[in-house]
Length: 185
Image (cartoon, rainbow, N blue to C red; front, side, top):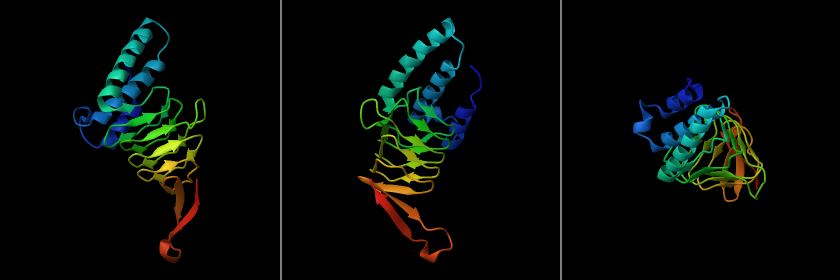
């Protein structure tokens, strides 16, 4: 199969040689990228055979490491998963470049057939956070561990709590760089 620059960016985020031998979460990321490469192929027998191989591999990896990254999701380059296990993404999820997920993260809809979150670039999602519904998580946002996020999070903001409240840092150079709460979901 062809060279994959997205996988190369993922490898850079893992920061080690041969993460497939050291980090089980890399198995799920590689399987996701493999599925996307198959989908990009021209229709034909090879694509059908590879698609069947993908589904078998997807289920094996999903069961073994507890990470479900369906190939229908749109995930930018540089995905890093820390502490694998219990990570589930809705197939319509959109995740930007250089994002980080930790164990127990769920990104999905709030009701059957409902909209799902869109994450910008450089988003950091803490352990066991739940991002639900048609929300937008801005570039550089941080989601605290155990947060349940049901509203938009602006660029550079942090969401914490259950339900999450969004906090912003005052611009650098202002009095004390204090934290301002801008609401609860």
